[in-house]
Every structure is written in structure tokens, then in C-alpha cells.
Amino acid sequence: MMELTRKSDYAIRGIVYLAGKPVDKVYLLSDIAAAVDVPPTFLAKIFQQFSKMGLVKSFRGTGGGFMLGRLPETITLLEVVEAVEGPIIPNRCVATPSDCDRSGICTVHPVWIRVQEEVRRVLAGVTLKDLATKE
Image (cartoon, rainbow, N blue to C red; front, side):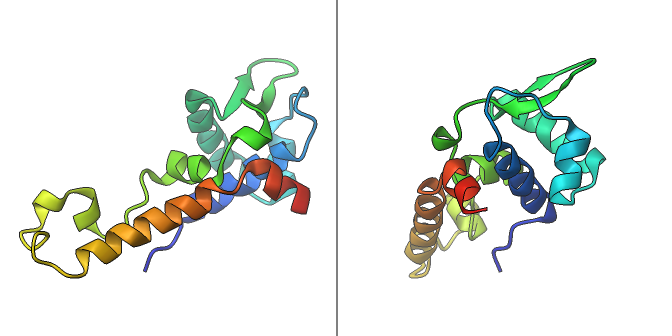
């Protein structure tokens, strides 16, 4: 079963919340965490990861916090999910076909490739702006 982790759920909640706020303002991590019902320490780790990738900008010290790193219409759900989970892989043979001695003859292998492509296509077609305006 392909299922997103709690970390992805928390990450999406936090960044969609930011996407629904004015983009030129810095928000306290504690306020974001409280608003989306996510443990602050968990969200802090996620947002530090996002910061390294440019999805959010972090500001230290008094008045510190986070803001989106880019406009919400330019950040896709695919980027957010892959930032937390890594590449979307429905079956290990998709990641490294050489690990499977059946990949050349397996009739299911092309199906897994299609599943991966479709999931990535759907997630790439949804922006944070789309999600934030529905909240």
C-alpha cells in the first residue's frame, strides 16, 4: 500500500497554512503549529528541511519565524511530498530496476511505472495556491 507518512501530512498542513497567508509576512512556528494541530518540534524539523530546499524562508531571533520561499502558485504538492518523502516509488523495481532480476520480463513492471507517472502528474498539477484557496 502506498501511503504518505504522518510527516507528510504535517508538512502539507503547515505549508498550506502558510500559502493561505499574506506572502510578505513572517509567521511564528508556534502559531503555525497551533493553527494546523501539529507538534511544534516536529514542524520545526520539517520546516528546516523545507528551508534548505527554498520552499520556505526562515528567520532567526526576535520576530523570527517562517514565510513561503516562493509564491504559492509556483510550489506544487509534488515538491512538498518529495521534499519530505523522497521520490514517489510504488514498488522498489521502479527505483532501481537492476535490483530486480525480473524487471526485463515482468509484465507488472510497466504498470508500476505508469502508477508512478500518474501519481507524480496528479501531485504536480496541484499548487499550494489551489489548496490554500479551498481552505
